[in-house]
Amino acid sequence: MRDVTYSMNVSLDGYIAGPDGGFDWSEPDEEVFRFWIDDLRTVGVHLLGRNLYETMLYWETAAEDPSLDAAQREWVDLWNPLPKVVFSTTLSDVRGRARLATGTVAEEIERLRAEPGEGEIAIGGATLAAEAAAAGLIDEYRVMVYPVLVGGGLPYFARDERRVDLDLVETRPFGSKFVLLRYRVRR
Image: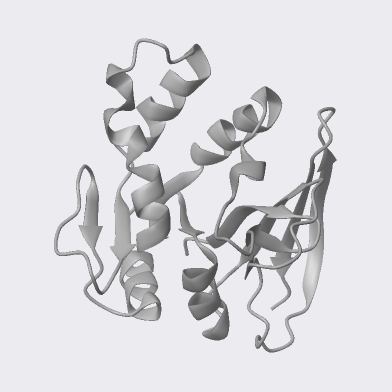
């Protein structure tokens, strides 16, 4: 069965976006960007909420930008052909290899797990992840901790989640000052 993973950059105080909705503090350096490129290779389909989908739309046409470096081109080559499922009540169409979700997060995950395919089912976005977590569908949390306190905003973890016991899979400090934490849900 395909694993469901939730991966995001997070401030040390637990937010993926600050009080104003900004996340300019979370731009990865070269080493962290390389990690996310390698991580993307393990993904078979990516689930996104509307906000993250709209943020990631940049990459749909980024290949035309002559200023992209080799790593950014590699990201484009992996991201653009990747199937994506977008959850939105306001969008009527999406671009590239994306499709609008036709069911709930739980229904989409069940459908994707039943279909033939390889690679993880990745979730991007705290709101979407909270729905999947409430249904007990997340298998692994991947947290890239940034050395910043933003003081509030959109939390990585929903504050009303039930207790979930986790097993530490990996800790990885990056020389650049970031730390990856990987936890598997104990079943």
